[in-house]
Length: 260
Image 1 (cartoon, rainbow, N blue to C red):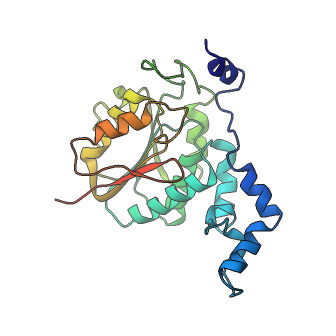
Image 2 (cartoon, rainbow, N blue to C red):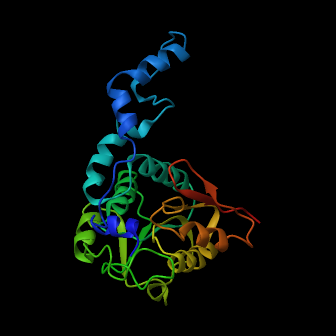
């Protein structure tokens, strides 16, 4: 066991280590407000307190922040990544096809999707795939082990999302076994948050052929240092396809399905 593995083993797997403490401190000290005023040469800037230093709506924009506060107890996904998810789902709602999330854990981002669909009175199916028993066997070089992230249950997540009124469908089991015999013809949006090399490959193999032109896949783990082979798997999955992953500063990557 190397030093870093030992150090990480002392912390719970589900611990969400803050990533922007320095930025939060500077915001409280008024640094970004001052910087924005200088950049605008004193002109009025709407939502001036959300420039850190660029416009950061996930840090407090009315409407989104209220939604995120309901999601936050159930997710490890940061506000900026949830903003990306919400924005992409708003785009995908203009397309025909179901929504899907692969890797649900405690259901926070599934709740985000369910709330947005329910608010729009959109009854398309929201497919949620997870073992709800932790991770499967991992590949060589991955720091996780079978059973990690098992602090969840299908019942608790089901209660969480169905309470919104969304048309949520839970698919319980390990990927790719849980894909068998499913009649899902079209997908407009998919959120892939499965952490592991083989699970990413299997997820893309299921989602991509069903994704409609203009549809979006978000990969949560692409730039996450704890998911050491997720980027490799994403790049491999699209190596022979026209679409290429677009890396975002949030650590996510996205692809937009091209037309014929």
